[in-house]
Image (cartoon, rainbow, N blue to C red; front, side):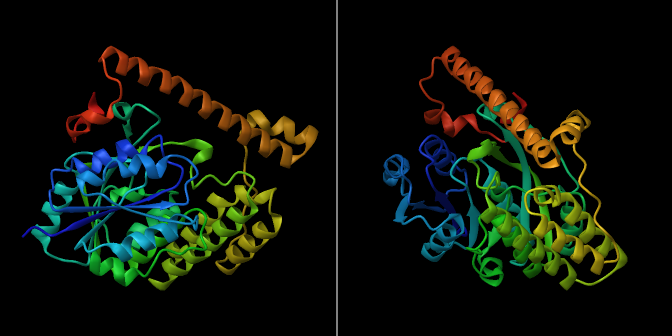
Length: 356
């Protein structure tokens, strides 16, 4: 028999998107699937929308709001798959995503190989997703993967990974203390348990940009800044566990610098701790640089207001782009005489969909 793949979906206030997400899972060409949704205390119609898919074999459970990591841990405890497909409730899989990765998994027959794939970012029009290759889009050993991720400020989207059950157990549960970057920290542990990463370019994931509504958005939350600092400390610990070298130390300092801006004016205590850690690696952190367009605000009103202004304007720009893209998405559907794209999921997300 084909190995069973568990598609695990944590969901919180995702009524707008979870229907399309589940359709993309149900329409997979790999037919030996189980799909489990954990509704994490949603206040909207997420549970009601997800429940419409129980006739397709989707299992649904609800819990009080404990966060995405707790929801993922519960979903995994209910699963039986030989491989795990993590899928956020607003993202999409190409039809053959799992099948292409499982073909590689069966060919190499090594449960300690971690399998990744390409991913593209979109706002509303999934068919306009932009697939931009990075230095992580290739076969790599775990240490080199972490060096590139942390040194070049890169990441792989959560749903890109296909993880054997053996690796999932070895990595231990998701860390419920992390309010953001929980996936970054979690897959560091999966990498540490793995022998290598195998990249499958023709398998594709569509990653929805949701702006301020995303779990990764820090905004004015001190709790999220504390959680981010914890994740950063763990990242550095994991990389150091793979061996110390001049390159490793330089990457750790670069990683601290890349994230320093979120602490510099809002949490100088955390920036000080980051600088002390950088000193341990023989360097001092440079003050984060803002765009030249906002330096005059800093001179007049102070750095904190300048950084906040830059962030607010960036968010306004993204919200405008999202609004325009939503209008174009609706116009596209009207042109095709569709009420919703969802019922066409079985054909509209092929591996080549991003080209059109």
